[in-house]
Length: 176
Image 1 (cartoon, rainbow, N blue to C red):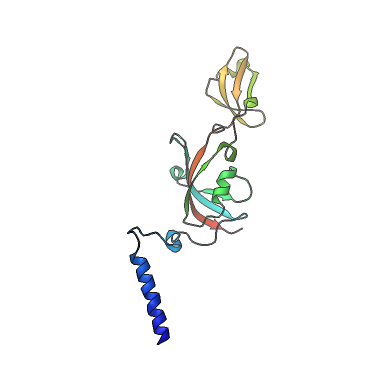
Image 2: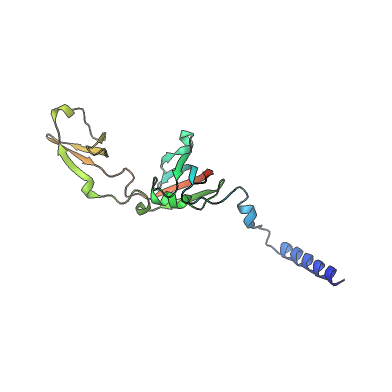
């Protein structure tokens, strides 16, 4: 008889708690993560993600969705910007996260020492402002100004100094 009383008391308590809510049902942990499966991504894993990257003004600067191919990230190897890798670490297949990265977590602050003036020869007469050129060390640079005998180049990454927002969706994890 006492067992029945305990079971009935628990059932009543659960019913009262459920009925006393304000009409808004909060998802339980299992409901909130129902789409997520498997173990969380960790260093050494190969993680496939779809993402969309935007600037603070809403301009989209990149998207794996547009290419139709997920980005493959080897966690812990530093193959992507630090903040992106940190955001992926700990996610499960099916999870989506939106994260805003400050410049230090992305492509860094603009560095004025990366604006350089280089000699300009007659063989380079087709160079124009806005062109993307490759420096001798393989780094890309944008032509800022074409002068009579020199060219002013900016070797900063085009997203340096900008905060970036990423919507990241984990589509697959291969354990390392």
